Image (cartoon, rainbow, N blue to C red; front, side):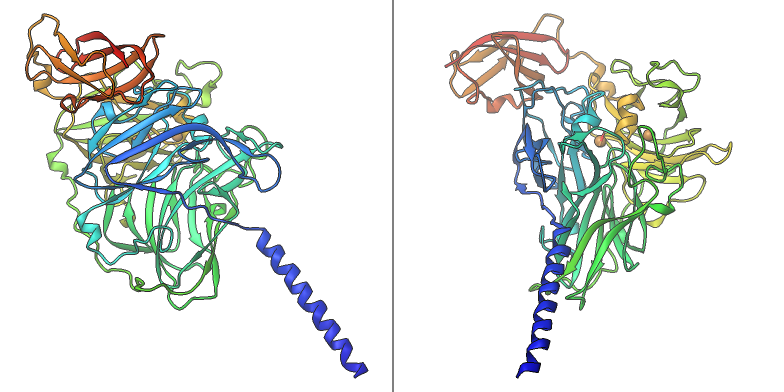
Length: 581
Ligand code: C2O
Ligand code: CU
Ligand code: CU
């Protein structure tokens, strides 16, 4: 009797120790937050200043969120639908919201020209023509993009279409179809964000040290690089192969199996990971950035200065994954084929547009930027300078020659393109589908890097509102590594209307819920409508409003307002006062 007590005592100590150890190893992870979802054709997005308990101990962090406390809802939209966005800016600053990767009219695009003042509702809409894939939305205010993205403003867009829907792919959001928004952030000692190009702390969906349970089957991850600057060389801790099924703008022809994939700022991939019969095991999604060259963002090991950070040129964990039980009706195989893409044909190109990247040595730039900023075509971006006029329906080759030692992820609005060549070679299989970001590697020795892609600029012409192209490293973009182009249609230059100012009638006046507008000239289209309150502040911005439906003014406070209407064909602006009851 006496002797048996000791082993029992030791056993108890042992179990206590195990418990303690378990709870400690548990404490190092936080459960990955999965953004809420919105679906349908009408979306209310309320951008606001808020705060969130991102760091477990201490102060909350001042953040920017859309509807919630950080980041925003994932929008599910269907190809073929017309979607309406009600974007309310409740920030204390102006902002814009850009639908990255969407093919839509420039005036709906949310670039730096579509500034939403604080308190204003912006209502763009468009017909979804993009392929099923993962896209995103984010602020694009000139010189403020890095600050506003750092606060956490943004969200994912998941497009569905009939081709993707017909495939046996994981599609249970947050269960076997998991969004991963990769960023890194710097926190100061009171847990507040510091807007810097490279953070010290990796975050996924705003969660620090995240962990997530996935089922023991084929799982899909939709991965967005939403970082300010860093590229992530993705891979799993057991070096397993994963299967890339999409590039930025749609499905690849077939899954591409890799063990590493370098994802640059702005880019998205969807991957399939086979976890069949692996219940009870765990693994990590990691960034193998120790192997990156010094000239890929995240491959530099700066110890001091503004670029110094804890993750530079290191391998680090992104997400801890625990494999749980298999779900009912699981996906258990990776499809062999996905779609048949019809890439654009070089023979159809009417022009090769040549762009250059370089550093700012010898270029007139503000002193604060010095010689090490980056420029496109030897100049900095200017809001009022149009770099290119592109005729509607042009198929064009864009050839970018980089004399920068550093690599830059280049992004263009309006179109999805096909990469033709990177330094003379055909693109890798995972990059041979539709893209809207392409990495332009730094020069090798004195040999510049040349990247060529082909795009077709169809559907939307607008002689007043441009589309942007830029480096997707927000710091570079804000510093001026950006340009813009107009897509113009020859018919758009013909003035179909007499010179006399168009007149508008508005009714009822006073109005309570809807305001109807009629031009005295039949068939006249409206380019833009704005409602301005008695203090001169824009409260409602309506690009190309569908006037037959009436303007919904039910959200306005009662008082006197001015309706300002710009005619589409002439761009003549007319104003009318009305009273909101
Ligand atoms: Cu995602 Cu012009 O940007
Ligand atoms: Cu974009
Ligand atoms: Cu850049």
